[in-house]
Amino acid sequence: MPTYDYECKACRHPFELVQSIKAGPIKKCPKCGKLKVRRLMGTGGGILFKGSGFYQTDYRSSGYQEKAKQDSAAGRKPESAAAKPEASAKPESASKPEKPAPSPSKKKK
Image (tube, rainbow, N blue to C red; front, side, top):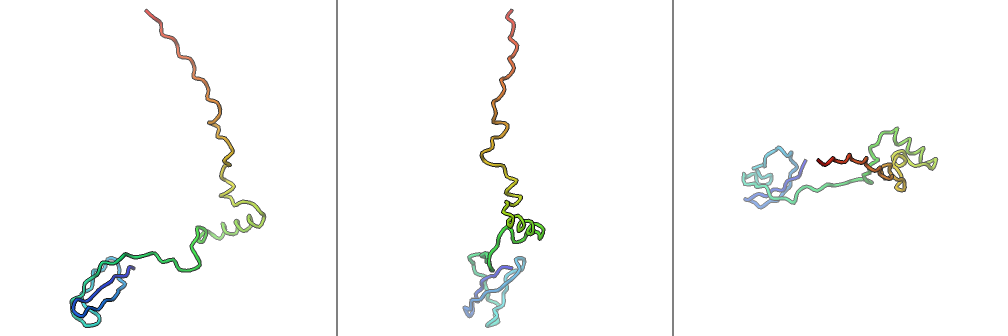
């Protein structure tokens, strides 16, 4: 849920409030109790990453993680890296193109 900035017009009390996106702005000041609160334009919500880090493999299945551990212990590449074709290999379409069949000549009248 996003955090919104508010300020009371009567007592100039600035405060933040965590609200649902669907919820409308509040009207009553929590400090003085008057109905003079306005929502301020904020800088927007930032993404906070907490913890040791987020990686692509954090949420992989346990079977995948076990297989990756076995492969790394054996000194092999994981399946995803082994499945990629090598850059030095030429594709089949790179061979010499065949000459098109000669077209029949048109007869002159």
